[in-house]
Length: 325
Image (cartoon, rainbow, N blue to C red; front, top):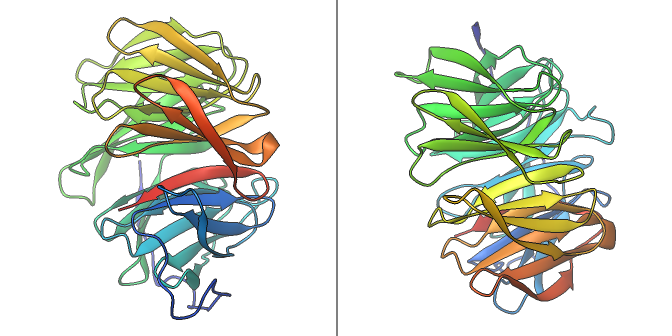
């Protein structure tokens, strides 16, 4: 595996703001509208729109900095041909940076660790490290698998896991110094996409979009267990903060599948509408928000009763979600 140094990111640009001089909701629910190429923020209590602004073309995923000031958006493009990231000032709800670089094509899954954003770049099969404070691309990790799509990172930033849709595996990348990364590729079911690390970091679960299963990876031994959850096209997968439940969205049926993590069994299947996609679990574990992209809405799920409490409109084709602390 090779690591190549990168140089400065693209020039800073300004975008249209929602309301000049007016700060947006904090905490807030951040939502991407793919068809409108916009980022929106909602007050999580009232579920009212608190702000929005434009991004690059067809944004798919978003991550928010720990201080809640900045969002980084991957502009995937209509056909995986997008070539940029948007840096969003969440207080002003304004695009303040537009990042491009040679080789950027199909940027997708993204996580933030400190002042660094790590994201998958499908076009050249890499994971890229972007320092959004210094405005530099610090390294490009050549992962080399087919369609590296989503990624999850351990709390200490020393391990990350990447779902490779067309390679039918998950790459485990580890580092001691943040510069040199080692890689192990772990076979899964067909088309792994949604991925998450258990809160105790003992397991990684990957939802296989092509065969209706979940691959459960024991991190230390790298052993894999397969669980049949009978999805038609699973899209995202998230643990609840207590590690007891796993939520899986099914684009094919429009359902949210809820699994007991310890018992390895389904406990509920909620019909949400047309094309269930992005999932966000509120940090306190009380609710989950699921993007029902085909119906242009977000479904709110009470994680105690496991029932849908309400829905609300959220742009056209909503998908990527993040929490602003």
